[in-house]
Image (cartoon, rainbow, N blue to C red):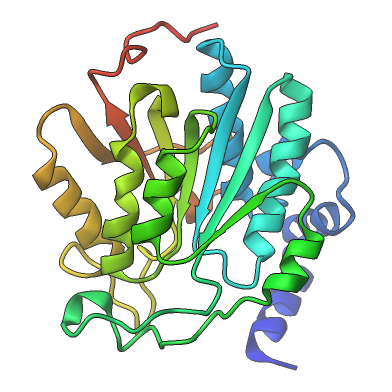
Length: 268
């Protein structure tokens, strides 16, 4: 038994609440929103991001909205994103388009300096079985290639306004390049876009901070965009959860204050 599995077993035996949540997650008991409130989902942050994108799109009277995953790897996240998009979109009467960006060949080579955290990430890791993943997807679209090429193509395509993005490209350089997605016109973006960043939480050997990796890309974006666009951390919020978790701290929101819909009232 692996240490991680042993830890989960001990937690289940000593915490009835945790055990019940795992049962609810495994057997999909109750609605998706109910499971999200209990953090009883494989990727609750994806469900939350989709939910918020749908809410804003509906309040702004958009019939469709797009959600994006940068860094698909083997595809588990994109499949979950597709599933949540279908269920939540159906309930809200909003069509949710799903896009996944990846090289398909695993991580490219890191840049030559320290900012890409080459001591954490390895070239070729997370390689995708493109044929297998494509056969599993129902409606999500894969955009394969370097983001420096695929993002401009996406911006020039016919797509619903973007409302949620997951950034999981690992490298500072790739994340910085992916931020080109925010260069699109108002028609292609909601005025505020929920953004989940996978690699901003440190552990015993990954030391993420404002001087390397995704956090540096965020800081530089804000320094270079002082004309009414910025990425802001969500601050203290619970995302409607009954139990505390780490992932709410991994959310930022992109703002375009001069967007034509930025000041449109969205309350109930």
